[in-house]
Image (cartoon, rainbow, N blue to C red; front, side, top):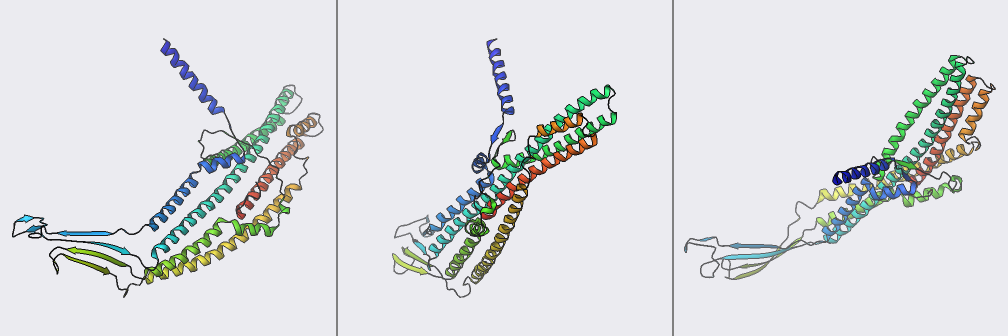
Length: 421
């Protein structure tokens, strides 16, 4: 009986904890989301593994070639009818040890090339981080302002349902026409349908956020954000943004480092055309002259046909391609900064032109509108029109706020900096 009671208490405790975990919300601001992103994002982790692999290439490049040991023994002596004899009287064996010596600084050139490969991997990591960070911050703002718009619908549905109840009472009393009730019901249906569409979009944004931050699907997110920012767009000169992009953009650095890599590769391929020398030391018991022969040898290929012409040409083409890619990246960079700056200025100006008093307390404005309608100061058609116009304007303001924040994040992205934090 005691065991059964303990088991039931255990099950009850698990149920309570599970329900609490499901109902509990994970509050996130942008800074906390970035911490989770840097810690848990799988794409960043995979890129970090590639960086470790590039560092391992440096270790490989520093290693010397192993010496080679060769040994040969008499297998079967048909005179003595014995196997593997090694004595001076009846046996024979020979051995040698050799070492490949690389010339023309091939080892050092390989090390430099591998270290440049590490630099490339690091820049690829930072460029990926720049791209994913922009996606994270942009998605965060999408989700946040979507919740603000959903709240507008929530408040509007509640106030309209309250109005519907009052109208249904008036309908029973015979004070209003049935068509007026139908119009209000239609309004509620439309509001709920539009709200459902926004909720579907919000779930997609939450899914993207969870993936970027490495969170489980059960994580119930509640986002908070400070909408005001200290730095105004017009206080930042365009030239400063362009210089910042040229200095900090990882993709431009990556293109320049790729040129450096190809220049080093050309030097290596030219060095590969110079043959390496193999030095050997040999000993032979009786198979050479004189017996107990000791000899030293050198082996070097003659570069008569293969002088690594193909790889040298490929390296030269790689330099030309890398040089062209730098010019392309610089042109893309300047256009992106110019376009993002113009867009940010336009969004900033448009939002600043909106009367701050318009985006006031929703319930206060709606209640005033309903009051005027009930007092017959405005007709039902005017009420519905004003009601819908106010909702659309609030949604448009939320959209403009998102565009403002998004354009600032895009400026961070195209300049490779955190000008707007």
